[in-house]
Length: 503
Image (cartoon, rainbow, N blue to C red; front, side, top):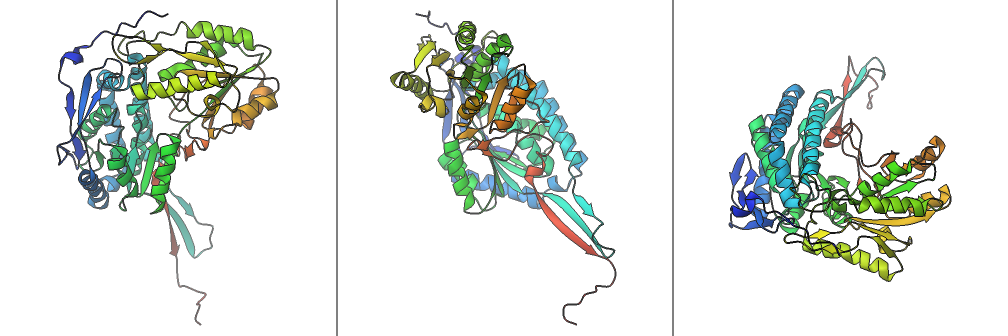
C-alpha cells in the first residue's frame, strides 16, 4: 500500500478565487444575469478561479462584435506585416508572463508545473511561427490562358471563426488555432473549457495590449449547451475549429452542417507504439512510460496502446514496469512531479472503470491500478494492463487517463492489424533499428502522425491531425493559415471581347 500523498497548499488557497470577466468587443463585461462558474483546483481542492458565465445574450453580442470587426474594422485590411507585428508582440508578452500562465494551467487542470512551462514556451514558438506565415500567405496567377486572359486566385480570410478548446491543454491548443486565424485576417469568438478558462482570459488581455483591435477576438466562458452550441450554429459564423472528444465532434459537425460551415476538428485517439525486438529497448521503454502517462494520460496523442513483439515482451515489460514505478505522482506545483491530478473526480472514476472492466474481461493489472490516497486532490496510480485483447473496451476506446494497455504480435502484418483496428487514427510510434521495418509501419499505419524511434514530439512546422474518427483537417504546418481562408478566382480579359454568343 502506497503512503498517502502529501499535497502542500499553495498561497492561492488562502486567497479569494480570482475573478475573470468575459471579453466582448474589447471590453471586460459581466454576464447579464450575473451567473458565475467556480473552478476548484483538482490537485488541491480549493476554489482557484471564478468566471462570468456566458449565455445566449453574450454569445450573440460576441459574434456580432466579431462580425462587425471583420466587415468594417481594420484587421483584415491591414498589411500582413502589420498583423504579423501584433502576433509577434503577443508572443513576447506571453513569454514575459510564462510563469503566471503556467501556474494557472497547473492549478486549474492538475498538470505538473514543469510540463505547463514547456507548453507555454511551445505556444510562444507557435505564435511566432504564425506571424511568419501571415507574411507568406499568397494567391496564384495564371498567364497561360491565352493572350487575352489573365487568371488570378486570391486567398481571403473566411470571416468569423468559432474556436472551441478542451481542458487538457488550455493554452497550448488555443495557440494551435487562434494565431493562424488572426494571421489570415479572420476574427474570432473563443470558448475555452469551463474547467480551464483562466489562461485564455489572460491571453485576451495580452492580445489587447499587443494592439489587436477591439472585437477581433472575443472570449466567453460557459457550458457547451449554452455557449458552444450557438457558436457552432450561428449564421454569422463562417468556420468552426474544435478540439475535443469524438462524440462531441460528431454533434458539432451535425450542427454546423445546417449552414454548411467549414469545420476543422482535432478529436480523439487510441495511439499505438509498436516495438520490435531489434529496437533500442531502453529508449523505447522510457518512451512507452512517457507516452502512456504524460499529462496523466489526458492527451489525445497518448501512446495508450503498447504493441510489443512476443519475443521481447516479458523482458521489455519488466523494464517498462520498473520505470513506471519511478514516475513521481503528486502535487502539480512541485517541480519534480511527472504525473499530477486528474481533471475531476467523475473523470477519474470513469478511467478506473475501464481498468475494472478490463480485469473482468480477462486482463490483468501488471503495475499500478489504484486510486491514490492524499490529503487533497484526486490522483490515480499510473497503470499497466496486460493480457489485453483487441475486442476489449480498454483496447479500442479512448480511456484518457494514465493507463497503458499491452498487446503482443509475432509478425509485422499482425502489428499493423492491431494498430489499425480502432475507430481512430491520430498518431502512432514504431521502434526498430531496421529502416525497412520503420518505413513499412509508417506507410501501413492509418494515422496522421507516425513517430519513428521517438514519441510525441511536435513542431509548428509540421501539420497535426488525424485519420478516421480522429478529426478533419490539419493544424500547424505551413498551410495552417490557408485553412482559415477562402479562394477567389478573378479573370481579367484584355482587349476587345471575341466569341460573341449572340452573333
